Length: 387
Image 1 (spheres, one colour):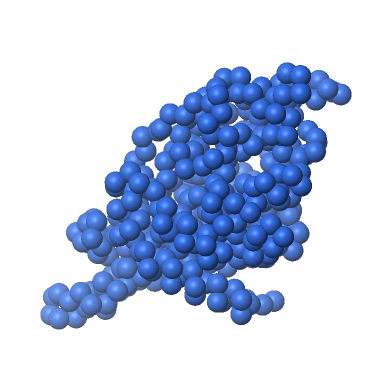
Image 2 (cartoon, rainbow, N blue to C red):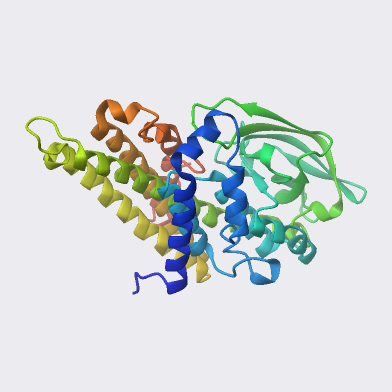
């Protein structure tokens, strides 16, 4: 059992941390408040090779795994720059296309995903289906050699920044007559595709959208994979990387909040000249939060290691646990940091309360803590399915 990163991963972590510090949380906040995107940071990260660390070298990537991408997500978040589209584009879309796309799709999309010149976002959630992808109502039907997509999607991140959206739909299996999932690479400017921005109480430079698909016509090669049989495995291929990288981003955010609070409490002196961090009522909650974040990190990198080793079933269990642990730890860390800073914690200057909405959302999305507990109860504890 080895808890050490490789020398290459250590170098990656240090380099990403340096890049993140170059921009910092003030950059992240200013972009979010002005309605802009973190374009400069994204393109520099792409130019330096950090966005494509998990993409094979033959397609312009670094040839690493999800462990490497988790390091990128965590370290940027630990400098106050949690980039949600790292989860959506390199982790979900690139993994699905690499593992289940056609060779033409790999050659067309993976190089751009690796260098940051292309973004592909992911559309699975629907207003009426919630977490139950078996109830998806977005349908794809044949029209000659083309496909026609009709349906609605909600909480779709970054559509305004992306050239394509990976849409999960259902299509009829000619052999059985049953509906089965299929994934389509859809241009975001396709006729019949409309987007409506959702107003969110989260400070983020990445926007959320409601999508309407009204007979969006696509060529045959928009279908991910060689046939409809690729749909279900392609869908599940993106879920473990999603859980792991979301968890890494949460752990990094927790580290950032604890670092900010610890610096403040070690130097803030009141009531006789002692630092407020010398009081257990201040120090112990921060220490407790730090323990929870470190525990989450252990599970994150266990899950990433299992995934990179091809042990998908075990990675699924650990990935869900990691997402649960990191979501809880990040929310605790940010809330504890705000409390330790007192009034300063609520100011933009100290850069902690600006993350309250994001870490609260991390306990809900991309899968809620309750659904993870259902999963663990069923698949780890052997309980009957409750939903």
